[in-house]
Length: 424
Image (tube, rainbow, N blue to C red; front, side):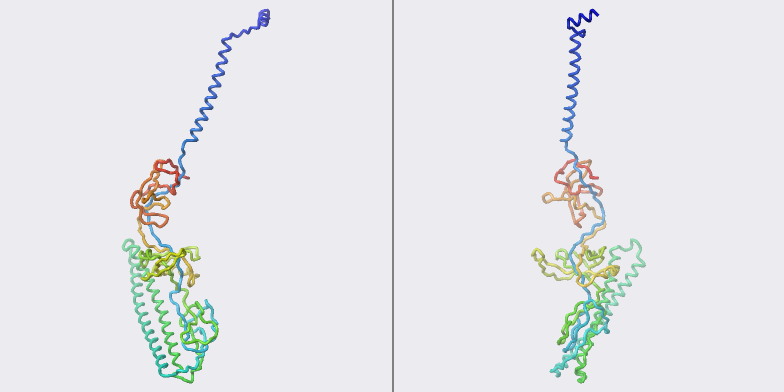
């Protein structure tokens, strides 16, 4: 007790001075370690943030597959066989009651009635002209009959050839292209027979109408007898040229008739593309109103081009290409009519095994084509030699191989050697 009292009186602590300094230095060192750790962590975070990260890209694979190059152009449907009914004699024509779209039947449906007028020139020359028209019509009828027989012979041969190939051909004995050509030939010949039958009916109608003009010479008492103008073929009325009752001259167009089930497609193709189109080429008919494209084939490429001014005011040389719808598409195309707008894609080149890359992976650098090849997490610029393209895929002649992965639509930040990562 006395010792404690003495220490309080003297004001001295029992802890030595050197011990207090030692404890203070330990606390300062701990604070420095904590501060340096925080500073180091912030520096590492800053360096990590500044480190370039791999660029996310979309990858696609180079493949070997069939490739077909198409030419796409607007077209329109049209009736293959149409007939303009004209007045066989001069006289007073009664009003035409038929409208566009009405069904007519050959040699039964009365289109209109004409009351022949009294001709002031019932002389030998007029009679000779009428007889000459009858003779010309009969000659045309005979020619149509011969053409029909020739067409039927060709159609029978084509159908027999197709039946033989279909029944005897085994896998690999004939190429798919030759098989399709033989089948298409049979279809085309069958349609030609149908067209010639139509022409024969028209020729027979012309003979009937030409003979009607001679009635007033053979039977003068029948000059005022009304003449019924009947439909020469079965089909639908496409257009009424003269609807109201009026006095008509011989040869005046009254209405137009056609078979809407027999359609063909007319496309105006640029001449530089038309030279690559061959009869029999596959055609896809799109934007016609249906859910699925229609299948067709090229029947004819007309030899003469014509000048057409585009919407931009540029003069273009275009060629008419006629296409036939396949028989299997008849039900789907039933809603189409004459002069309907469609879009056609005509095949101008095809190969079964083509090394091809997506068109979106290729870009021009100067006059050379290049793409970025993905390898070990980096993009490597490679020069490629390209061929034909269908817009989505492009033929690769040199520079890539099947299975290579390429960058799709590479951004400007991608350079040769840039680290990239595939986008999920």
